[in-house]
Length: 373
Image 1 (cartoon, rainbow, N blue to C red):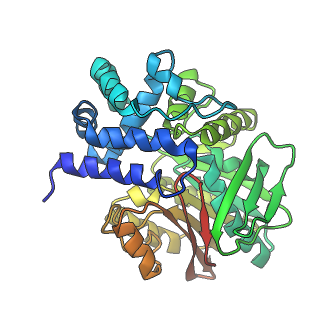
Image 2 (cartoon, rainbow, N blue to C red):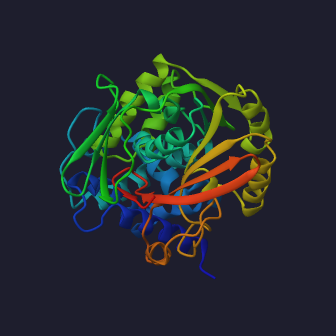
């Protein structure tokens, strides 16, 4: 059995690999270099191994570094909202290790006092085609229930502007052309159903054990630090956070398994609840996944569940989706070989009958989408 140190180092290498494929954008270098350094340098790995395994050690440590970096020499490597990506620096890994050595107590305290929450608003571009498919086949208005909502950025998905870039170079755009949140989604394969208009959302509610207040400066700074240090992601987050502050949505505090029944019951009967889960269910223990399945069947009304989650169990042995759907064998092989992606899936319950389908897969940082639906 591999040691905890080997497991954490392997997790960090897998993330670095996901951000450094052949032909990766130049702006990805800092994210890849950060996780490569965590895997390779004892000063960083020691800190990561001390983090409980269920708190995503490499990701949490990278966020802590990003939180402390502004105002230090290391901060010159990090992009600012609306700004360019600082140039690649081959000495970054060694500099990061020295930073960790100097700031070890502060980094450890940040890891102990926070949870990692990526809040990648770009994932809304993975969800939108699924909602479009739902709306096209069911003329009821939609309610979005964002599970593990964090800062609630997914709840504003109908206020964003989307551009899908097809493999042949053509583009399809939809959404508010004046929106400050502009999401570009490169499509590698397939043709996601980009609607003529964003589906109408008449109700929205977020569920989280710890809903986050973007109006609190410390909370905002921490969430900004959880964003991959890539210029596009940093700019997207800043714009979406400002829009969320201007348009606060309802949130419910509590474990989703404990509160979801009441949340869904609060939605008018003529509205179709759409449960949206992006990188949440993958972290539920198997027993809780089974409980969620039973809960879904016991809601007593039509409901949709849209998921963007890695294969489970999380890691190279993953072979199935959190929704219990089959995926192509080559996806299982890609996952085993270190590929990192979320499976885009849809489960529908109509008159007590459940159906499900895999619609695609997507990069965790919203860098690409493969559509199979």
